[in-house]
Image: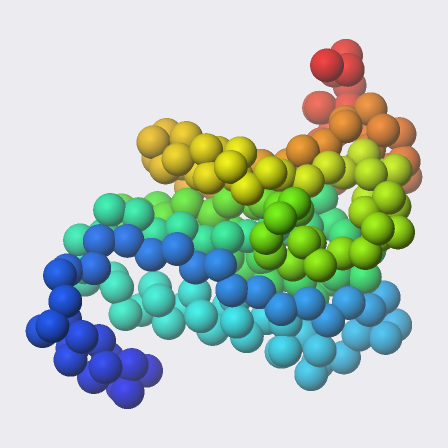
Length: 189
């Protein structure tokens, strides 16, 4: 952290003031729970947790217009084999709420898969078909940026942008997280 502070001080002298942050780091190391290990958790959590914690610590005294954390729908829906990834994203969701409670800007966006960029863009056709069969779609890049613009204008701590065919998705769930229980009881739209 001291080295980062020194680098920021040097940069501050040469650049306009920092007005916002978009933290979108992420690493996957999927495995079912019996195959998970602490090194796998550290590998996946470090970019999100350490990165967000450093950005939070280094910008608390700055007048930022926005502080955006790219989280994942995995932290609210779960995702088979991604316990470590879900935990890292849930930590970022909590950071967004903490910063908001302290009067600091922060929005965590629980994104679904983006179609043309990001981790999901590298999925093979078989995986894309399996995701679609679960009711999970992809976000076109243009639509993702429009959603981000709308969320920043609404000034929210956390929001999900998930292209989901809800009847298909909900029909496959053996147990629903509380956040989805009310949704499952509504008529399909």
